[in-house]
Amino acid sequence: MRGPTVQEVTVKRSSITLIVLSAALALVGAACSSDDVGGDDFRVAIIAPSASNDLAFTQSIVDSANRLMEDGVIGEVAITDGTFVVEDAAVAIRDYATEDFDLVIAHGSQYGGSLQEIAPDFPEVAFAWGTAADTFGLPNVFSYEAASDEGGRVMGIMAAALSESNNIGIVGPIEVGDAKLYVDGFEAGVLAQNPSATVNINYIDSFSDVALASEAAQSLISAGADVMSGTAQMTVGAVGVAKTEGVAWFGTQSNQTTLAPEIVVASQVYHWEHMLEEMIGKIGDGTLGGELYKITFANEGLVIEFNEDYPLPDDVKQLGEDAIAVFEDEGGAGTKAGRGITGAPDRPNTRDV
Image (cartoon, rainbow, N blue to C red; front, side, top):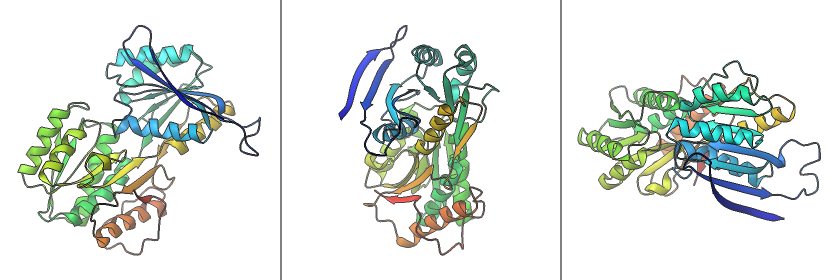
């Protein structure tokens, strides 16, 4: 068996660094038959707006693809990250399609226009993009989204129970997509648990401005917040301020514990691998797009990963697990999660890490 190799090359007509991760996995026993979809020959390309290790949106899809590569479902994963400039992303999308990748993923809602223009030129290539709910009526475009409001509500419930000042702060990027869903869900969770709590939300109109996120966090703390959350890659700045001030933090998209183990309580983590595996199966059956996917607690695409080193009271953690149980039992509706819910069983959608 040959292990993974890493190779760096430069994408033509841009200065984007392309990191290609490839792995050849031997077929062992009944692991994969010759008729199975995916495997050594299945190639996936990812174009994303921020760094692959951003502990947020981009890392969530990269980690999921790499898990499938480790499992032998994917043979190669190519990544072009840091493409905040849409025109640069469009170059990468077209280049990957030209290179006959089996699935080209434009991981950012800002890439929709480019994908709508490029996909018809490559009818034999499958494309996917998110977070969005529009395939443009194209037979070779999948779209996907995260029900991030579910995890937001769960986190908000625990945040309200944990807060001593009854003042919660949220740092948001731009009011779109899964970011807005998460913020709205978090606020709803706080108020479901404690209707008298104050929830201050500061949208900074940027997904990338770390310094502005830091300023927003400081402003929220100055206003009395003793528990905070935020979404998107720029929140590393907010977490840094929360760490300095000793303010508890709830993360989302990827596990953010390593940013500040002493103050990160838990993270809602996007596990896109179930969705990706289903897409790959569809592609093998000849369906190259035209379908929408959504990850939820019910389908195990959303997972709350608790920081086992944070001294979270058992009753507060139980509130979170109870709320998750409601989402699972209602197949993703979850509107009843909040005060007074008891008796949640052990769930695979929570992990201590």
